Amino acid sequence: MEMIHNLAFGFEHALTLHNLMYCAIGCVVGTLIGLLPGLGPLSTISLLLPLTYSIDTGGALIMLAGIYYGAQYGDSVSAITMKIPHASSIVACIDGYAMTLKGKTGLALFTAGISSFIGGTVAIIVLSTLAPALGEVGLLFGPADYCALMMLGFFCVSFVSGGSLLNGLAMAMIGVLLGMVGTDVNSGVERFTMNLPFLTDGIGLISIALGCFGIAEVVKNLDAKSTHTPFNGTIKLIPTWPEFKRIIPSALRGSVIGSVLGILPGGGPTIAQFAAYAADKRFSKHRDEIGTGAIEGVAGQAAADEAAARTSFIPLMAIGIPENPVMALMLAAFIIKGIQPGPNMISTHADLFWGLVASMWVGNVFLVVLNVPLVRYWLSVFKIPYTVLFPCILFFCCVGTFSINNNLDDLYTTAVFGGVGYLFLRLGMEPAPLLLGFILGPMMEENFRRTMLISRGSFAPFVTRPISATLLGVIAVIAVWQLVSFMRNRGKKPPLIEEEVQAASAAAG
Image 1 (cartoon, rainbow, N blue to C red):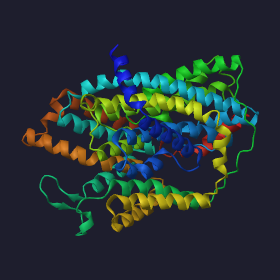
Image 2 (image 1 turned 180 degrees about the vertical axis):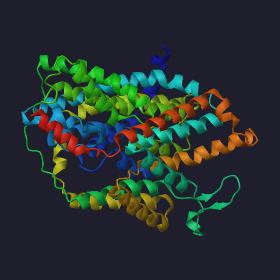
Image 3 (image 1 turned 90 degrees about the vertical axis):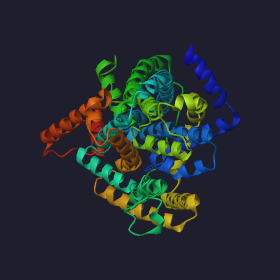
Image 4 (image 1 turned 135 degrees about the vertical axis):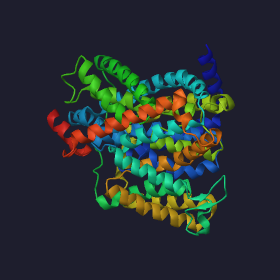
């Protein structure tokens, strides 16, 4: 009953005309971004982050959240119709594109839409149930525990994001060093400013985000010189009753898998889609058809994708730790608004927390009502030449950066990080852990120094407190596991994602 009361309280805020408008904007923009090749919620949220200064807190966070989970559905549309995968829609290329080749594009798109709705609904129930409980557990955390938890976040997110523990941790450490630039809060001493006055206040989060994700993605797409053929097929969205009955079990199974993996540090839609697809091949009644254009191959991964996108908000809002790069940007949005996500957020900002949770279900309805019937119109986005699109992206990058402080130095900083981000991409070093290190590094330093002050310079609290000792043990296990995996796979060249999708599609027939 308490959960129902809390959700009713949240709907009072989510269903205001103001918040409904921002929820609809987020869902529409997110779907468009999911359709566009080479873009995604990470770069889009980084582009729109400066807008949060001029929008009220509830509306800004609802809009950014809508962009994130709205992009998951748009990703499926581009993968199904044109075999253009994003990170969260790789699996959709296999059975979804196979269904398109069989003339069942409408059925595949309807399956992705209704499965996303089911996955989002299940995830919202999980979010409403578990987030308050995790918040109460978070009250038991002390400075040493928070420091150990942030170290765990570094390890988990780094190796999941980049595939290599060494590369991921290297990027995270670069982010930590960048976070140290500026004036030390405790001593007032300038650190790593190189006698440049504009670095006294530190490097702006917006400059790093826009440079490494926005500008770097544009340069990468221009360098690739890839062209995308517009989709011209016919779309029929109405499935038969036997086909609809095949969707439900797979969608529910994917919803559970995505909800669980979305909570775990380093989890998220990318991992959840593969796990749901593997579960369907194992437990589905039609598992022999999966890989050749089966409905289950689309339903399970779409539900897991959407569920993981929503439950990834649990560790962010209940504990204050982002578990993937998009959640790191959401953390930045909270901080910009003067809100520190964590155990006290549910009690001190109950209207914001439950309003955001309720808005996710409202966004779920928007995605079904707006996107499924209007798929044929969304596909017209593919007709926009990239030569027209990329100048608009660069323009908004410059406007967004300059509008914060009205300082040209911020534009120069953004341009530098755009070049650095592109260099990272060419070297195979994902810039995502860098942003996490930039945000979590100063927070970890603050809690570490606080622990040292309380313990008078002793490291004992890290091993005597049960929570921190357990977390350090988990870090040790992850490090050993990664080392063993590295030694086993040494000398083996991992296949590229595109090659994996092509191989799976070729095997499908």
